[in-house]
Image (cartoon, rainbow, N blue to C red; front, side, top):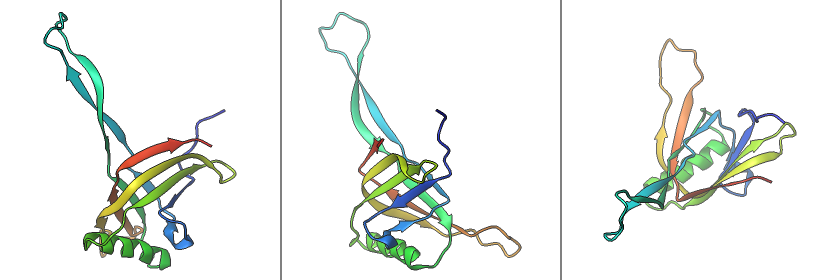
Length: 146
């Protein structure tokens, strides 16, 4: 047994083929529990007890080369609708794939909606691939292993 590599993964935000795309990077998938410190007034100890509090979820960033295709249009349509107050929240699935291109681990992101679109940096003397970033907020993240 050996650790998985991060180079094979899929991202989808719906059931149709146009709601799946290739990305060069996915970052920001984080779950954090706040810590609540409490001490009752009659407690003889001179310290607090720690308890788990509310969970917070980081914004997730998808990075990819600019591709003005049908898949790109589906993302842009979702982003535009969200910025105009008419967007829907969607579940996003990020799957890490094994050597047979089957999901080895899956991160299920609940209630996601786009909050930021970043265009590539333009440089007249550059030869780099044009990368765009889409950032979205979410209401929950769960991890599953098949």
